[in-house]
Amino acid sequence: MIQTVEFWVVLVAVLIVFWAIPSKYRYGFLAVSSFSFLATIAPMSVCALLGWTLLFYSVAPHASVDDRGTYRLLWSIILALLGFLAAFKYLVPAIIENTAEDPGLQYVIPLGISYYTFKLIHYAIESSRGKITDRSLDKFLCYMYLFPIFTAGPIERYDHFLNEQEKVWHHHLAVEGVTRIAHGLIKKLVISGIILVTLRNAIVGTSGDIGSFANLTVLEAWVFVYVAFLISYLDFSAYSDIAIGCSRLFGFRIAENFNFPIFAPSISNFWSRWHMTLVSWIQTYIYLPLVGLTRKPALATLVVFITIALWHAASLNWLLWGVCHAVGVSVNQAWARYRRKKKLKQFNGLWWRFCGIFMTFSFASVAYVFAETADYGLSGAGLVFSRLLGLGT
Image 1: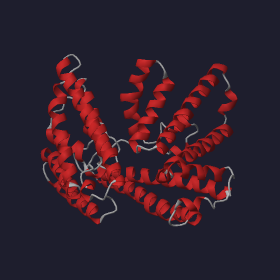
Image 2: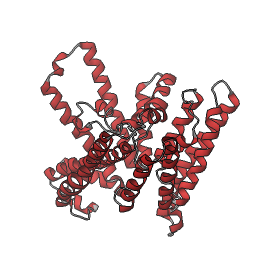
Image 3: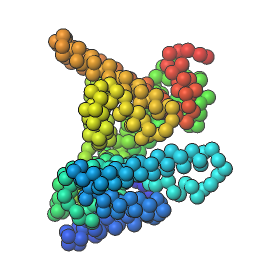
Image 4: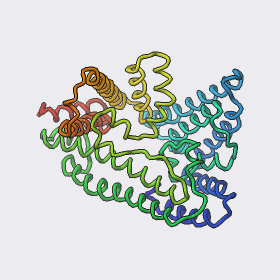
């Protein structure tokens, strides 16, 4: 959305009115404005999601772990929502790809459905635990539909959303917001969109088809892998910067999503810095319950990364990407435990930290080959890997 003039016009117009009206009307106004703007982009999907919003708002606060009936009803709704997500995120695209053209199907794929689903599940679980007590419909709708973060996150938590909002306009909101937006635009339009894309195109051409990979030298293949991963990181973090900056203009301090993961000294540390709101959500609602149930952290780690892979796309390439990271994190954690047990302090120096940063960045970049070549399947990934090793013609 940020690449359209309409987004920025709506942002400025809504911002002016937001701060001009009395504070008691602001959540409602921002909720209606966000919903209306999103409805101009994807009316059917946004209206469908509104139904889920009202259903969760009505049921979740009345469910409790102490009341089996309401608790089962809540989990039935959660499972139905996950089925809705699976159907529209995976089934509908498969139908569009593998059957005769049906343009109508493209308009029923809900906008921002992954982020939306995770936020609703968070609200439902925390409400059933008694940790969410605010029953204001205007605040809940604003939380669900705030348009700067609707399609690209971060996955904000409801309590954080309500607690980190300033009620009075201060000039520092403009300074912080505009500065963060500028950072995002520079990342997206200049560093990624011009410099790195130009470098990538110089290596594989503007078409970037699978045939261009076959002609890469070993050096070109490695440069391509690093550049492709950097573009992915900068694009994603740029959208997060812009979403956080735009939200800051309205007084909201949205949760951070990236903390310079390209400088992480280990793959475990990388995942404490990359897409932090998604990782935090999965750790809370999948990893910790699984560890408590199975007492097998490695199994829970594998399930977590398969979940993250499927969150991106239902393809074998993405699944292998997830398996790579699951193995990497499990091995890294085992190594960390061994170091602590043997008290191997010689690996704590600055030199080893730099080595760790390079190795982690290389690991994440090589694993990203599976995602970068997802449109070409395993043959595309295999071709790039063969060039990295100097194999083939």
